[in-house]
Image 1 (cartoon, one colour):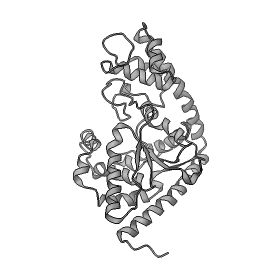
Image 2 (image 1 turned 60 degrees about the horizontal axis):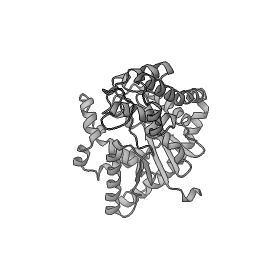
Image 3 (image 1 turned 90 degrees about the horizontal axis):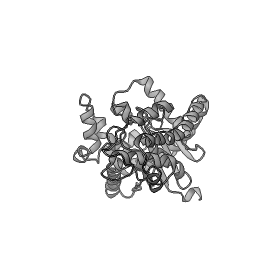
Image 4 (image 1 turned 30 degrees about the vertical axis):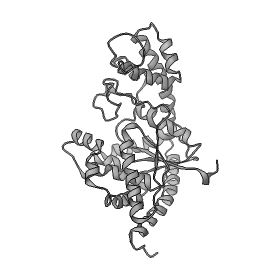
Length: 335
């Protein structure tokens, strides 16, 4: 497909906590095939992470770890632009402009703001409230056509769409109104300890999640400790949320269909089933870990990737921001 005719994709992950198997299966893994169909920009959204107090050295390490992880998961820097959010200052600048057309009421209604306010009651800062506006800026800055989203992010994408339409109505057509792209699996990976909640890298219970940095023994131990349902039948269904979650993990990691998985574990106990899930997860995670380790040892390569990605992103971002400034009446700088 010709580059000019490709629609544009933007997505990003925060460099905080441990990237989980849920993050990978629900989002990052789906990015690789998108490279063949779209012009993709994949970002490490480090500015978003500042809504919670960070240890600077850890944030820097986590950022580079995530850059290497993106590539290890199949993001090809020759096909996609890979960069760090704070390297493109237009993200923050456009966020301020969008703040002026975002309403307090709609930001107050954001589910994630409510959740994070409860979890960080001692640090309810304006960044927590404005987080969705910065996310809208991330998306609209690149005239993004398609945004890969999970079900928990649909509300944020809707705000981005609303802000794009509101700005366009007020100042004439400026932004592309983005569409969402749900992963083909359509599955949300749940906590191993609470199958009613998603697997979250901020979960205080380490046994509730599988990290992409967990070794094989740790993965196997966590899956053995995963909660199960009352009976001993391995099948999926609304009445079996725990086993359904483990089946989703198994099918996504092994490539086996749900029907075939259920058939293969018919009459078998949870112990044997959990061992098979662990084998499938380990087979996915170990090659990623090895490639990430190799990439982190080549700092010069990672820096060259980030420079190339930021240069491309900055070019696109400046085009949009210049248009926005002109539309709202700001006088351009004389150069």
